[in-house]
Image (cartoon, rainbow, N blue to C red; front, top):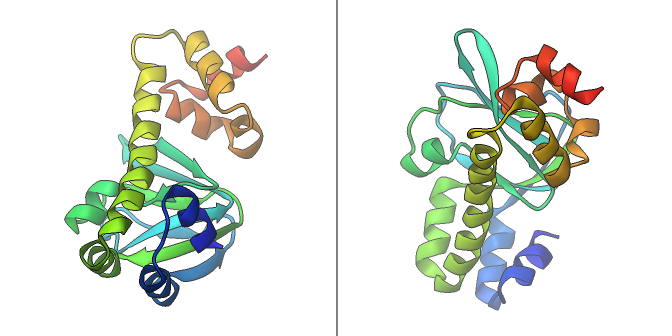
Length: 183
């Protein structure tokens, strides 16, 4: 399945397909499964085939949602993964998920051995970066009502998949102010 998705981004040579088949592992995880805790190093990056994952950090004792990643996106705390340093974020399954994982070392070997894979890696990372930028676009200089409206326009299904308190923290709102916007 992962090969079909990657082929939609860029053609794969037989050698690259074989490498990915050998190095990528498939995982099914249950809702609330913690993929990574703050203080751990992100050794794997995951492609989400099915499900939804939330990234968050703790600030002043409060959980602040930084990203929601769903089907056809990659997830890993990017700073931790690419620098191989401790993460400040947690990564938790919001729903039961089906994931394809690849280790940092295997990803680096893949990028070095197969230059065509760099196009795929760039495209997946670009999607991740744009998702982060989109959050900033939504919350910068906007009222609570505007933030919620933009979220509903861009990801209408999110309200049905994620707890309101997590959506509120993602939008930099209190749960109370979000419940007022939702009625």
